[in-house]
Picture (cartoon, one colour):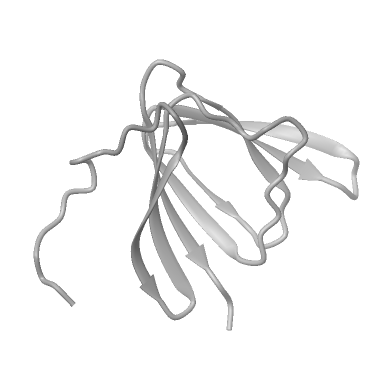
Length: 115
């Protein structure tokens, strides 16, 4: 393991052609990643449904997440601005509905796998 300092914001990958996912740290049961978006959203009809918990913090830009409650047959949206965070439990169907089209949206995502 290196003790060298790294900067979360520099350099940022160019995400105009597609979202960029960088794993920053992996430990048993936990993965931390930086996600850089530039106008991307989930494809129509696509839903994430993960086998792990995820905690997400928005560090730059704006985003809108959409969630599904299959049992109640309803959907809800959550607007995220800088500093907002959300916990997405394992199995919760969700999608990215919007990220800034004219600038970067930067996420810190912590993926947690229960033992």
